[in-house]
Length: 349
Image (tube, rainbow, N blue to C red):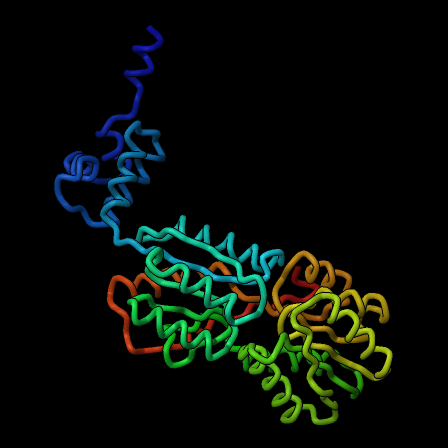
């Protein structure tokens, strides 16, 4: 008797139609694939079926997905153990799950080092298995050549965070790095109560984005705060230990050091050194990306500002642009898709 009662109360196709605000004939077409139904209508039917617990909701979901254009996206990142790039990978996976209008699958690879070959081998190794590739690669002729070879195979490439392969890649997605440098400079100048020296760390010689951030810092101080002296730029190879040792050395040699900007990775070393050698607020330390360590340093006021990349929007926009390039045809336009930075202060976390 209980079994019959349960069967009698199971949601029906009529219940799905009522919940979705469509006819039972429309639900039937979606369920059985008899005729093409508009994507937004099919999606509404699927959402309604799932909401009320209709037994064929998984099948409706499969039907909806089968009708969508496909995108196999390859994503090449680096610094696999770094929390920011783990967050990047997780956000890309969430973007795939919530994508509307396209059926997306994702392959992720992490470059072992900053060597151009580590990036190019991963990127070209994905050819034949993905429809488009996005990467956080270094700016180097070897990377540009690899992008050209991938383009010749019909695989569009997108540069993320660092604008490599200019002239042959599709869109660049990331922050306006020149503006990021000026924001960092403005914060250091504003937070410093007297003139002194400013230090800048970049990751290496092949990060175009870091060079633009350095240029932004220097142009701001030249224009608005010439009383500060910008020290020679330091290369930290985006490593914690090198940044830590160099920062301690800077603090020891320059008692009037007022600000430090880490334009790339390695900020954990700068945070540790400043925490060890200076009281909170004595040096205006500006870093990129909100991670557990930079968040804790904001709270303790050893970091003055964090400039963050809006990863959710970046990943959503990447899927949209990659789908357009794959399903609409590659274009000759190599644009720059700038995203507004997320700015974090001690009082905003």
